[in-house]
Image (tube, rainbow, N blue to C red):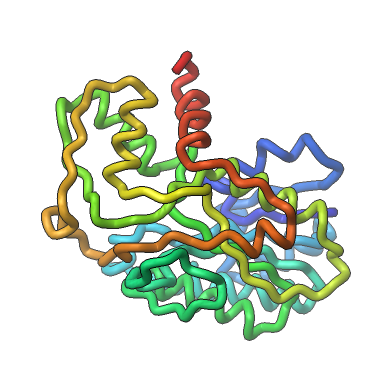
Length: 289
């Protein structure tokens, strides 16, 4: 297969590069300024040039707080960009694998969200990602939407890297304990996408939504504590309430995803979040943990 990866300089895009040499696919990686997903001519140029059969859309505006003040930019990337990719995919008979988020849910549930559960985003970021999903569906292209949560990796800016930095410079810090979700290692998500590509028939027409995150769940406080523990950092992590750490965007208090569907359909084995975190920290620090 000839595969186009958009947003290739982000966490997931970079993680997908780890598997490029392990299969017979031709993968073409693009990010700004070479490829602007809000400009259809930019997409078509790459699609035609490389005879693309699958697009993996990793491009997104993911700055949750900044999105509250930059809603037009978030809408352009997450909604218009998704729609443009879907339209090109439809015209050129391309399968679109589109990455979305747990933030499409409002967080009032008390059990893991299924793909069939009603969405109700509570911030600009989540709302634009939900709108992007809808544009993909409404366009009618062959598509697989994958919602994920709390993504981290060795690349870019993310919670794990922030905690490692703070943990090496501060004696203590406060982290919220009343927001529950699941940390997801981008390498695991990338591998899941590779497994899906190995099993599907790209000539078939897909219209499916899946959830993927690592197994288990925790609070941001638990996540931070695990990072300090695994990295053997002396920084003391103190639990605080969300009200003590105000942000521009409201986060869902509970956004754990149910992964039964993706495990059943593709026989995907998903590691526990702490197991993957340990591997990622080892890779990032390049030291014995």
